[in-house]
Structure formats: structure tokens, C-alpha cells
Image 1 (cartoon, rainbow, N blue to C red):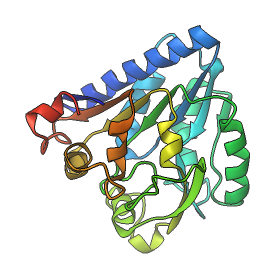
Image 2 (cartoon, helix red, strand yellow):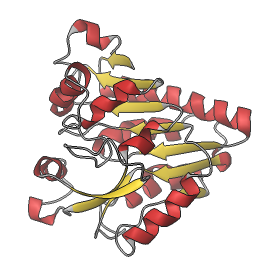
Image 3 (cartoon, helix red, strand yellow):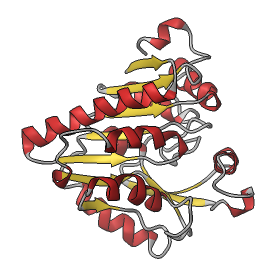
Image 4 (tube, one colour):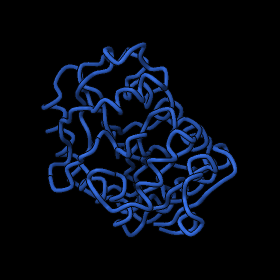
Length: 250
């Protein structure tokens, strides 16, 4: 894993977007299409803004897959990850081929359908974040490192649900759905390349645990250290608890 630290999250987001855009262009040039995996959440907003403004991406040749989604939350809810991706990525770029996770009407049917499409070819570049509890997608600790299922239904732990309240998506923890659809850990690791975008001081402890602690289901994002082509983008706040050596490579 390569770790890059920037002075602020705007500079971090722009650098991550330049990296991501280059990989998309490379894939389109090399195979006439690019498959991407997109994350949402507040921490991804600056990155998505910079990515959608990147020049010379043939978005008509990009196929987008969705990382995770709440179960039982309608598309109209502000916290719906489908809504966020539609508004902040799909509609801004004109991506025509996308696969959104419908956790509201038919979660199991959604999993079966999208898993079948996903199996056709690898993801060229995956965009992910790290949660305050160290989760990767909605794989909260202790995460399942063994399942080969592409998508799984998971229960969200209290720390994860409190993060959603803290970010302003819900008024109270009782409003946060208790379950979600999540891409599995092993499926995420099948991506050819992973770009992880993790700003803000509230993520600093999770970043430290994932980079300097053991690779463990208790720190789910620590598994990214086993992937041969992952770049972790941090700002100085999310990197604040790291030792100097960890800020270069891990």
C-alpha cells in the first residue's frame, strides 16, 4: 500500500481524483471500457466533485458499481447512497451503465442480479473510504474476511450508526437503519486497483489502527495492506496519529 498525505482535504481530493481519472482513461484506452466501484458518504464528496470535473474521460464507456446501501431506506431519503451517486456522479457525468443497490424493495434480488453482472469482468478501479470504526464498505468489525459472496447483508454496529448521526444524515440513532447491503471484503480486494480517500480527524484513530495495528477483522480496512495496488489518500488530520514511516508506505 502507498500512503500519501496532504495538507488539506481539498488538495487530497484533487490528487486522488487525478489518480482515479488517469486509471479510468487507461482502462478505456486499453480495453474500450472501464469498470469502477464507487463509494459515498460525506468523506467522498470533495473527491467526487473533483473526479466529475476531470477532463477527457469518456464516461459513456464507464460502467459503475455501487459499494453499499442501507436496507429499508427509500431513494428519496437524503442519506440514500443511490441518491448521492445519482446526484453527485451519474447525472453530472452522463454515465449510462450503472448498477445501484436497491435495499428498499428487494435486497436479495438486487444482490443476485448485480452479482451476476459483476462476475463478467474485474473492477478496474475501486473508490473506497474508511469508517470511524475502521469499516470497509459496511463491513463493520468483526468483518467477514472469508466469504466469497460478492454482496452480503450485514448488521450495522452502534459506532457505524452513530457516525451517520454525527455526519448529520439522521436526527437520532433510532432513525439509522440497522442493516445494509455491502460488497464483501474479498470482492473489494478483487479490484485491479483501489483508491482509498480518507480525510478528517474523526478518522485518525481508524487510520492508525488499520495501518499500524494487526491485519484483523477488528480493523476491517487493515486488509487493504494485502492488496498489491492500493493507494491511501489522507489529509494531515486523518494522518495525525501515524508514525512518520507509515505516512510514506505501509
